[in-house]
Structures are given as C-alpha cells and as structure tokens.
Length: 129
Image 1 (cartoon, rainbow, N blue to C red):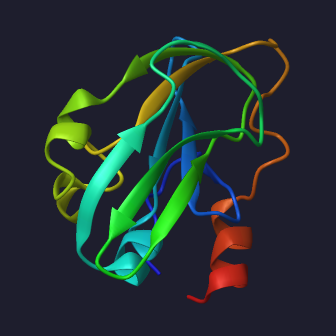
Image 2: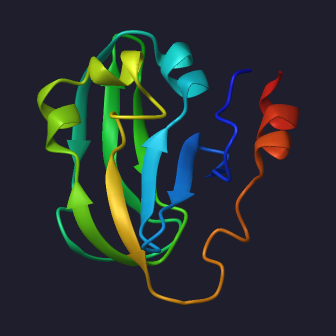
Image 3: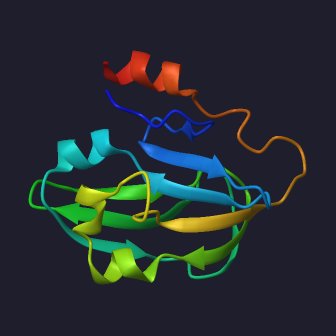
C-alpha cells in the first residue's frame, strides 16, 4: 500500500489527516478507500464552516458500488472546504493525497490533535500492505 512519506495520521474509516505549518489539519480520503469504492460519482460535504467534533461525520462519498460517510478525526473549527472536489469528484482518483483533500480544520486544542490516530505503519498493518 502506497502512503505518502510524511507525518499523516489515519482513521479506520480511511480518512487521512495532515497538520500544516500553521497548525491547520487537512483531511482527505486514502487511495485505498478510493480503490475499494471504485468510480466516485458524488462527494457531499455537509459542514461548510463551524465547529466539528472528533468522530463526527462531515459528509459522504458515493460511488457505483456504495455510499460511505466521511469522518473527522479531530475536534475544532472547519475553516475550508475543497469545492473543487465537490465539483469534480473524479479528482479523488487522481490526487487523493494532494489536491483532492476534503476539508481543513483548525484544532480546538494546542495539544497534539493527531495523537490518537493511526500511524502509516498501523494503517498498513490493518488494511494490508
């Protein structure tokens, strides 16, 4: 399983989380999840801004195979939604770890907001690769 060589952390539900230099957490969906879903047909982000809690759903993704909810792994404030992915869900197939991120969240706490999430090695161990 190919995962970026950076400090991303992961949820069992296949969302990745990456802290930027400004402390804002970018959230996206792993290539593994996208491969499992196959042809992505629709992305809905239900939270445009405002507070979000760790474990809360923020939208859903639909494919020809299934519909899956999207989860956030950190508590904080949604500060940006990637409208480009909503407009063109196929972006997820091309750049799941780059331009096809989903939301950005400013963490509520200055403690390490990603501490409870899976490391890349833990994610690989759970899902093969």
